[in-house]
Length: 67
Image (cartoon, rainbow, N blue to C red; front, side):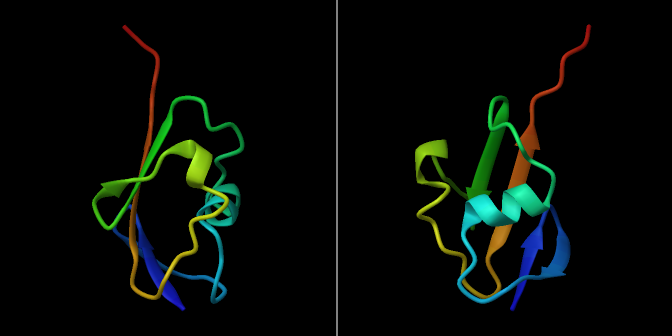
């Protein structure tokens, strides 16, 4: 199935969890990361239970340090 991650369409397995997609996308440590699915923020404690559907739109925001 296809989903969109930060405005890029990608193919993933049907029934994949949000946590699995984030791991594949390179998010290993959830600290400093916010994720929205279809413009709704998903709390980190729900990432493993959240199953994605075709055409879902994910926005992944990683905090950056700097000054």
